[in-house]
Amino acid sequence: MARGDQLARQWKIIQTLLAARKGKSAADLAAVVGCGWRTVYRDLEALQAAGFPFYTEKEGGKSTWSLLDTTGDNIPLPLSPTELMALYFSRSMMEVLRGTVFYDSLESLFEKIKATLPPEYLAYLSRIEQSLAVISKPYKRVGKLREMIERISEAVAQKNYIKIVYYTMSRKKQTRRKVAPYKIWFFDGTFYLIGNCGLREDIRIFALDRIKQLEQTDESFEVPADFDIDDFMKASFGVFHGEPVTVRIRFAPEVAEYIKEKTWHASQRIEPRSDGSILFEVQVAGIKEIKFWLLRWGAKAVVLSPPSLRREMRQEAEAMLKNMRTAPD
Picture 1 (cartoon, rainbow, N blue to C red):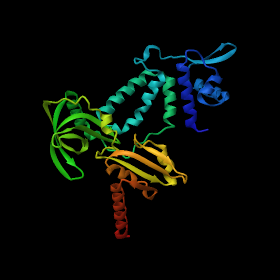
Picture 2: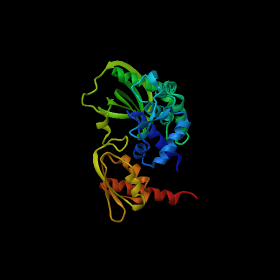
Picture 3: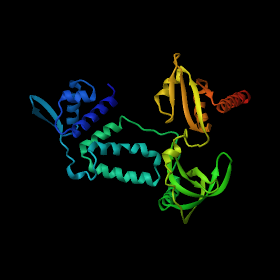
């Protein structure tokens, strides 16, 4: 049996017994975790050996198991021990934020949680950490942005304009802008600023590592009452914005299951075909970003519409072929 499955099952047993007002029989626990009662007994014995304070009682002619909550008044938050364990364990997912004020604050929180949890919970957490790895790639080194993040965060909180010199990657050009900063947004390993740009007279998204100069001002602004970041970003396939467009793609059987495994966009619709392929339809804001995504699937993805995306994909394929023909061996 996979070690990860065993630990996940034991974690669920701990959660179930902590949440239960009365004890649970081995049969009850087996039904919850989806295994045989003998397996549950082995898990309970292993957890007892690890130091978890389980005890049994007779009720209605059958034995029930309970978990004594030894944390008592030590937990200063309205969270259960397993919720605190889960929060503590999540720190590995935050490694990409190392070097920022967010990571430092999380580290401080995690140390407080560590001091709160009983030894047997920490020992069990250590066992889980040995069976699960969280790796985020690719990523940027965001520690260098620490001061900028703090300054922009202050401007967002105070609702004060900022003045920036911004490098636009597509134009290879720097421009001076006055921006009303609405939100700092972390997406796909990159920090962004979402705000109203005076130069473009519209809401724009700026990558923080492309802000070359930053000046805070005392001039205040008001965020529109109807602005909602989820509504603003929901049409985008990632970060870029553009005109709304419906995209239809046929994915070959070889990659169809990979596409079906994930939610790539909130608007996606997937239609299975008799030959094992699928039709993928999505409404997005512009075609630039979905074009980059399609290139990873190569010849296994065929764009059916819109014509503009078909043309761009054909031009990209032709340029790649030309580069292959002319590249030195």
